[in-house]
Image 1 (cartoon, rainbow over the protein chains, first blue to last red):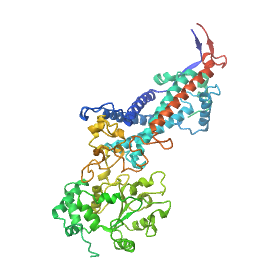
Image 2: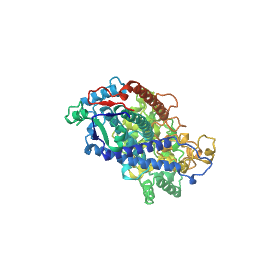
Image 3: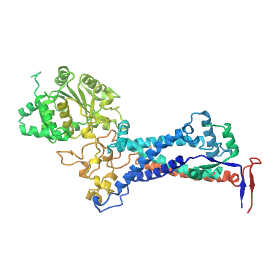
Image 4: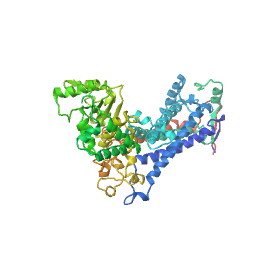
Length: 239
Length: 370
């Protein structure tokens, strides 16, 4: 049996609401991408029948719209949580306003992407680069909600979609809005690919239990990292 | 006669239109405009009592298809009364006058009816070089700006005047711009379409006359009565869309059965117009009913969002028939290759680190036992 004894401490990084948000978001994005792709390029697998027997394409669109509402409110909740959650889920992690955050990003690129050095990054929650990428995905979330509800507004009399009616004239018409909405879908797909890979990568390299942390909430962090964090002597204190 | 302009009704009667036909026309207009029953009497009253609208009708960079459409309106009164007989103060295609006389006619309208006349524009305005569209030695822009100064409102007929249409399509050699981009300070009504439906055009004119104000407009300045719904939402083939029944080529089984033309590049889902309801040529048909996908002619930039027979537009800079999906798939494959490469490098470079703990001091102890 191979085993090792490493001075680690368990840290409660992801609170329950953050974890629930994450998984609702993941499910929504998968559903929205699959149904969205079908809406953009539907398979014509039925022939020789009449319209009144079927409604499958209508159902696909219905699922897309329901998931979109869920996605939207879940996103709103996450923004709220960015102001009330613990230090790892706060807004200031995501927006690189400090010079050290940019420095850490460079460091992460060297360590994890280019792999030119072997030192570990002192991050308990997200590292600066990950946070910044999440910030960009939040912007994509926002754009996707704006363009999606913008297109939906014309066929709805409900209050919420109507709030987005201005986006269509603002972007010069439905053609442009739909194209933007469609291109951004690929942003989600590419993000998901890299995101899942990097979870495996970090779990494998850092052994801080990052995969299970999004299920149970706890990470295993080296004691020296926690000491530096508690004494605020880490390289980039974020709060 | 100069100050006592005849009313629409008087002109109509003089031209042999019966009272019955006149009322039919008013009822038709009220229906197209979506007015309630009492609206009919409002239109009747307005056309009977109000003097005709003085109109200056310009042709700039265009093909005259808006005029052609207008004179083929389902009700003869529209063409006869609104355009040919009554409102024709200045209309380059249809007026008898030419040269100096034409210029005089148009100057006279501006002098006689300041703040009252309507400027109707067909065509886009070139901005790159003023010589591209000169009338009487003056550029389109100069003419328009002068005419608009004292007008009541501007009606932009068709896609050229509303959004630039084909002249403004990439690379836009004349720097063509729609009316609302070159003038300011006056309400502009964009009556979209290439051309707009004749009855929609008539409806806009009748609305201006009846209610003395511009119709309710949407965010792109299009009259809501005619442009608030997508062609897709009012399409008689919509049930086939919801059922997932699609035409895949123009001669397949689905085309014969009248399935949805979505996969044939129909732009109905992104186009706002009343083709599905008012239809064309006295309500005979419209493109989709004739088996052809909508090309989106009532939307800005529809030439650049082509090809017409493809659902997703091409992505500029990636060559012919490259859609967002093809670019996306390419990026997806590139990402997957990148991930695979990174995973391999990770295992080569960091293998030792993973198997044996890095020597970070005495704190870490590794025991190997089997």
